[in-house]
Structures are given as structure tokens and as C-alpha cells.
Length: 307
Image 1 (cartoon, rainbow, N blue to C red):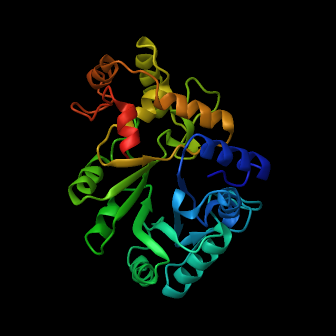
Image 2: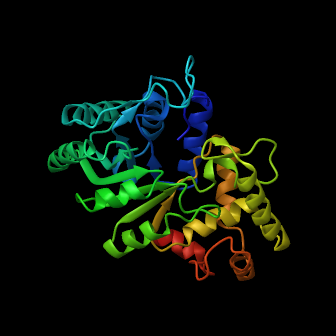
């Protein structure tokens, strides 16, 4: 979802274009723009019957309304974000999300950025179970940029979904073991950050970012190697990045996070870009991806339709 920094008109255009292309899974959070993203999405989805789409939001952390991760006056990223996984705060968060999104139920709610609050977030989990029994919440999941907190919580409570961002990509496969666990347990995995905050979207770039920070030399060099291999096979870097993630059998949804209609169109084209199997073999030989990594099949279209 477009956060603050994208104006209302641009955000509405992106969502309308996504709807026009048949996209029906929408991920948002109170954190994004401190509620602004939920408001924008709620307005845009008002044209669709509620049963026609899947709506995913989160709870546990937010920030001042209309602000980005580096709000005015901040000395560091996320300085003014606020975490609260208490039962009262969780219920209030869900009620606020419902109002902003203009709906009476949520299909998926993830505990958001739990890594430093593993004990506290179990109280939020209990409250979400109560909300599920009331028909307000559907699936309860975990949304994180890290794998260990997710594995920790999976051992302590019942979850039915995972949102893992930036940990199963062409640059970082540290989430592979978690995806294997999810598949074994039948948990749906939403993969975010497939471009690792932009560095994998295209190469070269004047100021590439990785993990929302300037990409260091090692990341830049590794990305250049990947881009070189892709170029040798005539494949856009973004297409390889997207299709690598989509190929994993545990992944049910990939979040593309476009900030413009042009970015949306480019990502959709990348999903359907023909990629020769030799590219994946070459990436394996270069030790960029592990051997025997799941590969996109020849019928990617049918895979997308079945998910």
C-alpha cells in the first residue's frame, strides 16, 4: 500500500488500476502512514462487494498520522513509532482499522513487528482469538522482517498465516527454513519485500536501497552479479526477482507494493516474463541461489490462477 509520500490521487489511481487488473488481495497496516494508508484503501475498495476481495491488516505498532518512517524531527528511522500489544490496545486498533477501512470484518490480521515484544504480543493474540469468535477477525498471523521471532511464536501459539518480508529473495534466502516449516504446517505465506526495498527492482541505480537503508558494497556487488546473469539470458532483473519468490510452494501471495501505476504495470509484466530454465541453473552455479531451489514452471499462469 502507498504510504505517506504518495498523494491521495496517486494512491487512488494505483488501487483502481490494481482492481482493474483483477488483484483482490490487499495488505495494509495502521503503521503505514499512521492510518492514512488504511483510509485510502477503504475509500478505494468501496466500489467492490466485501466478499470480492481479501483484506489483510496488522496490529501492535503504529506511528503519527500521515508520517513516514522518518517523520519531521526524527533523528533515526521509526523513532516515533509506538508499540502496544495489550488486549485493550489490540481491540482498539482493530476497531480503528475497521472504521478507516469502512468494513465490518478483516480477513487476516498479523501481529506486526513482534521481534522485541514476543511475550507481550501473546496477549494481543488472545484478544484476536476473541475477535475471531465474534466474526470480526478471520486468520491470525505474524508479520515480520525476521525469521527467528516467527519460529519462536509458532512454537507458543496457534497461527494460520505468515507475512515474511525481505527474507526470501534473490539476495537473501535466510527465510527458507521458515517457509519449509510453513509448508509442513499448511500455513499460508505472504511474501513481502521481494525487491529488498528497491535494489532488485532494476540495475544499475544511482542510490540503491536494501532493507530501507543505502545498499552497502557487498549488496551492490551481489546485485550486479545477479543483474549480469539475468542480462546474459535476456531477462529483466525484476522478473527474476518476482518469479523466484512466486516459485516457492509455500508462498501463496506476493506483495508488490507499487507506488505508481507505472510500477504496478511493470511488476505485472515481470510476473509473466518468459524465463529460461538456464537462468536458474546459472544462478545456482554462481551460488546466488541454493541448488535445487524451487523454480518457476512452464505454467506460471495456471499457478497464479490456482492461488
